Structure formats: C-alpha cells, structure tokens
Image 1: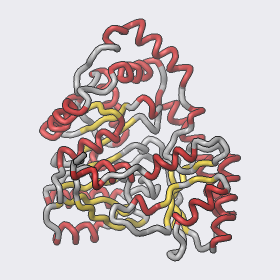
Image 2: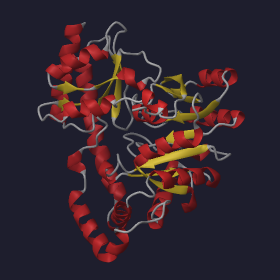
Image 3: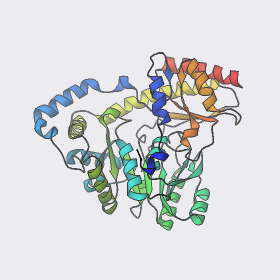
Image 4: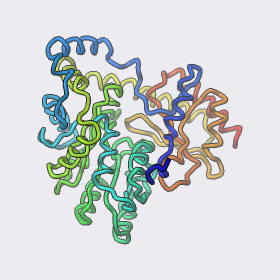
Length: 391
C-alpha cells in the first residue's frame, strides 16, 4: 500500500508506549501526565449521570451542535475570568480534549514546510499533532522566566514563513516553568509586530500551589492573535474528554469547519454531564483539594530528589502543575538510564522526545501527581540509586 507522505513523520508516542509498561502494578510510574484517580469525583458523577438521563436523556443521547452545548460554554466563559480575560460564548468551541485543539491548530495554520516556533523543550503531544502537517520546528531556549524573547526576536527577524507560535506559559509541560508577566507582554508585542497567531495551551493553570494565578497571554491580547486552549482533563477527569478553543470569530469559524469534518461534535452526554456537575457541585472546591494533594506530593518529590539524586543533577521547582524536569550531566543519556530504572520498577519519560529537533538526551520528566507519597519516596530513592551507579 502507498500511504500519505505525512505518515513518514509520525511514530508511536513515547509516553504512550511507556504507559503500557507502567500499567504493571509493581511499577512506580512517574511517566504519564496522569491525575490522581482516587480523587476523581465518582460518587458525584453517578448522581450527575442519573440526573442528566432522567431530565434530558433523549437530548443527551442525540447529536448536538458542532460548537458545543451552550450552557457549558457559558460556564466556561465565566471561569475564564480567573485568567484575566472575558470572552463571549460565541468565541468558544468545545473539543474532544485540548489535544484535539492542538490537532486543529495545525490544520488551520500549517502547510508543509511552514515554521512552528515553540519552547525548548515543548509538549510531546503538541509536537506529534503538528508533525502531521509536516512543518519545520524552531525551538526557542527558555530560562526561569520562560521563553527568551531576544532569541525569539532574532528568529522572527531572520526567518521567513513562520506561521504560528506555540507555548505553555503556566507550569509548562515538560519543564514545570511559569512565564513572567514581562515575557507574556513581550510575546504579544512581537506577535503583533510580525503578524503571527499564538497558540496558548493552558491545561494546568488552575493548579497553582503558591501565589495568585497570573494573567494569561489572552488577557494581554490586543489584536485577537491568541488562540486559548483549555481542558477539564487535569482539573476534573481526562476520560470525559472535554476541552475548548477560545478565539476571535474569524479564526474560530475555521476551527469549527475542521471539527465538522473531524467528528461532527464532541460527546453530547459528556458535555451535559460536565455542565450538570458544575450546577450541582463546586468544581473550585474540588480543585482546591487537588492542589492540597498535589502540592504535598510535589514537596515530597522535591525533598526525595534533594536527598537521593547526585549533587550534579539539576531539577526545576514547579509552582504548580504536574511535572518537574531533571537535567543530568551531558555525558549521561536518560535513554540509557531508563532500562536500568525499569529493572528497579521505576518509570519516567526520557527528555529527548520533548525536543522536536532532537538532542538533549541528558534530560527527563517526572510526574508527581499520580503516585501516593510513600511510592514517590521509594521510587525516587530507587532512581537515585540507579543514577549514582551510572555516574
């Protein structure tokens, strides 16, 4: 058979392959970006599901509009105020998780050979979604305040055919870093100057452990350039597959056209169940409980790393979200560490896959949200022993 050229650019997600290994009950997995399943509101959802089916079962099981269930979109619009901006319901499209929003972004903006600018490192799921459009990736280095704007400006000055900028300003996946306000404002200025759209991916913004939630990029958007991607996957339940795209009307219309061709609509019943949960229960109270648990797990992981990892290993201290990022000495490859860690029943994600142009094999990502504290302590101790043996 002759396949489409784009298939040459696609391969199995390394994270998905690792998750198969991590399903073994004896494995302490820091690999996936998984929420804690014991915190899912299962009992509440039993009542929610029954209420939806009893009150509007026929509508919930029927086709719905492509742009989504209007009452849910209204509630999402209200929730966006905590990120510093207001939006109309008409500017929201419900998607099957924010991953679908990433896929649609590539379809809306990218032709073969176009340039995507992203952070270095960047989210593996976005890289894979964009690759289907066969673009060129230009990575911009980051520091503790986010993407380095001088490096970005130099690229914009010297490279043609840049089509979009993709960023995760809050608790970035995989690094855990959060952008400063100054960097956010400067990115908007550069996007305005060079006439570029920005894809702002915000799956973790609610999960802040310290301080106030900073304004999103969308809050500084003066020309309708920011396409905001949100999701309930990390703050509620990923199995619901409820995400959204927020954009100005001319842009969102194109996303809507793409969705009509992709799946007609997101699940009607899942949208109505999400909406009913928001009516019957306090999602912010649920998120506060998540923050309490995840903050404690982060602290346990940070202390364990400090105690057990070699002193020449560096790591980030995230202010929220799900991940920390580990940098080994340059002569040590995380891909070589991984099989030895798996022998000790510990899993993580090697960092090289988060760099679309390769390299940086001396890095890896650790997730702290999914494992209980005793397993975090034990897993990091085992991993620290492996690292010391290899060095």
